Length: 74
Image 1 (tube, rainbow, N blue to C red):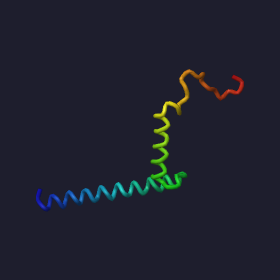
Image 2 (tube, rainbow, N blue to C red):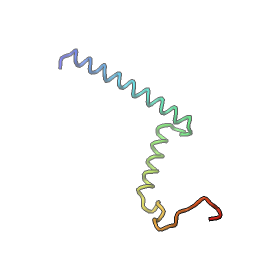
Image 3 (cartoon, rainbow, N blue to C red):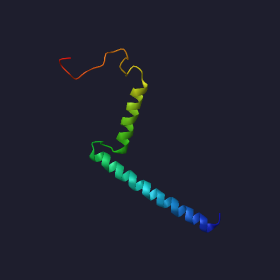
Image 4 (cartoon, rainbow, N blue to C red):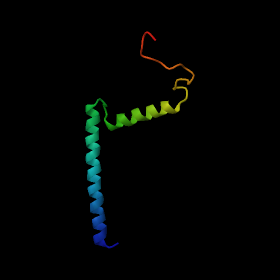
């Protein structure tokens, strides 16, 4: 690649980086407004905890339990 091609590639990458940074800032602001106290970091921690619980067989109810109902007279 010559010098001009490299400059063009760098310019495209810088533009994409700006777009990604803008989206991340916007997402972080949305999460802060929705109650995630540290934005993206809190979301990541929450998802990791949920996945750990889902992969832990002792966290899941046994399959032989009868289905639950919200009807108090059932």
